[in-house]
Amino acid sequence: MKLSTRGEYGLRAMFDLALRQGEGPVPLKDVAERQEISGHYLEQLIAGLRKAGLVKSVRGAQGGYMLARPPNEITVGDIVRVLEGPIGPTECVSQEDQTACERSETCIARRVWQRVRDSIVEVMDSITLADMCAEAKKIERDGSGDMYYI
Amino acid sequence: MKLSTRGEYGLRAMFDLALRQGEGPVPLKDVAERQEISGHYLEQLIAGLRKAGLVKSVRGAQGGYMLARPPNEITVGDIVRVLEGPIGPTECVSQEDQTACERSETCIARRVWQRVRDSIVEVMDSITLADMCAEAKKIERDGSGDMYYI
DNA sequence: AATAAAGCCGAGTGAATTACTAGGAATTAG
DNA sequence: CTAATTCCTAGTAATTCACTCGGCTTTATT
Image (cartoon, rainbow over all chains, first blue to last red; front, side):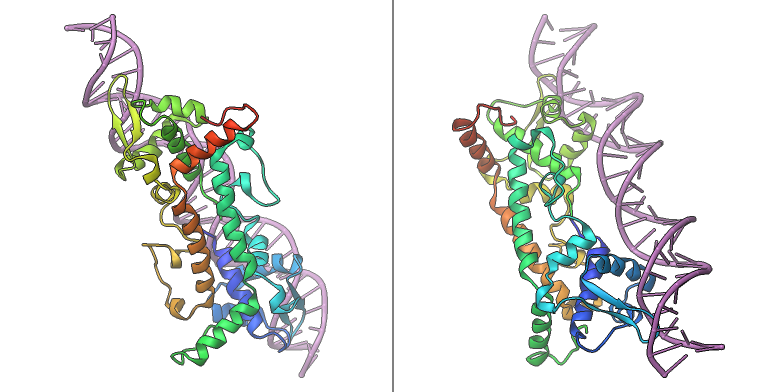
């Protein structure tokens, strides 16, 4: 019942880009260093995010990545779906995916997993990168002075 | 972001026992057949549930398993925790487990995962085996006549 | 007492997944 | 031209998953 590092790293990387939105392309190397993620590995993750249209890239020197949409139009759910696949605690209730077993129509357990899925989806689809940036700023304001990665 | 078969099978098996609560010990072989789970594999799962005090066993001929507590005192969360470990989308917000990375205190992503965890926990801890039995009965009453596994 | 039905236990295994690493080609600013 | 950067493919060690196999112990029934 855990995300892989793909989802974890992916959200951190996207948040990192969101904090720098409007400053031009951000080199992936910088993101990887700040977020302490293997650069080559992060490359693979962001390739998926690019193909899904969540980030766009600028090639060549002084190139890098930036969000393809404003931060308030990208949700945690968008990112997790790209990197981890359809959201849901089991195959049989995954959005989009649903390889139903024959018992699916009459399976009480399935109804439980549906409720779990719905609650996960509601949270993930309601939090945007803009929300995360706002939270970082708020904490930074009335906080300990620590930087908020960032 | 998926459960393994341990959690899936475990809930089905526990629900199977709940439906037969009060009828004496239920042989695991029967549960495995009804739920279409490998008997040997289910043995391993139920061993954990027994050690955790969720089921009790009767050895020897005519033996089997039964719930150790009434169905309304066993939640989905209880079962999932035994079979899948602490609930949460990442290590850093797992209940009980929390191997914090150094960034944990200042990590905005972590706050997101906490909210996801809380919503999962709330659903899983609010649904009991008795709820599932009631739902099965209700559907069976005003339903198509299909059996509800069962 | 013998038998058969059941739980209990530990070891092994093939396949898949995970979290990377390695290396190089293509693109572009300076 | 060079250095910085994205893009792409392949490989890989370690781990996890979903079992299987085989044997021992306990107990109701005959």
